[in-house]
Amino acid sequence: MSSHRLLLVEDDRSISEMVGPYLEKEGFDLTYAYDGLEAERLFNEAKPGFDLIILDLMLPHRSGMDVLQTIRARSLVPVLILSAKDGDVDKALGLGFGADDYLSKPFSLIELTARIKAAIRRANYTAQPAEEEAHDHRIILGGLVVDMETYEVEREGEPIKLTSKEFGILKLFVTHPGKVFTKAQIYASVWNDHYYGDENIINVHMRRLREKLEVDPSAPRYIKTLWGIGYKLEAEPV
Image (cartoon, rainbow, N blue to C red):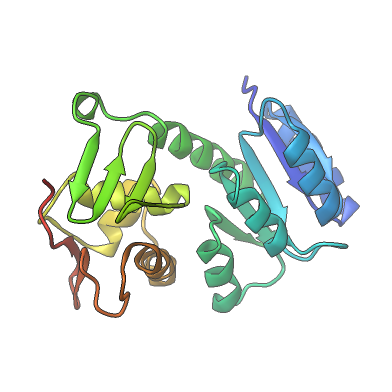
């Protein structure tokens, strides 16, 4: 049985009463929050921290997006968004702010459980540097420094905060310089899941990553776009 700790942030108690007991039967340890302020308090006070956060967007007192920003300022814990909002704009906003996955209401409890397990599995995989990288864990790419052990990134000596997915994408490229990756390959590698053709997810993450890495995101120096094909790392690590 799983002993992973989950924070379920959902103001609709009927949904919490449906989801919570089901996940507890699956072996998860659930903590419940019913508004944004309570969610932030529980997140800040949790010791040890949560293994995954299920976050509704429409919350009293403080929005789900505000809660997500608070979480991302301190942690790379996986965040799965639940919302009745199903537009591409909302998906892009949620994923762009650092969410790891998005599930629209109404949803299947079986699918929710599968996505939770996949997100935790991906997070555990990402948190362990590859054995061959342990001896040379710092990759220098022009003015960019990527530390594979501490997951820290610097640009021209200034630290850059990346989400777990953004770091996963960057790690994929810097460990395979010059290799062209399609969107399907990026998704399969970083999300560790089948690609269902939702290009918006990759587009949002690539845009956010470039905004953090590049002096001019519209003319990227590091990760170049090969239109109709994919992306590749242009500069060679040193």
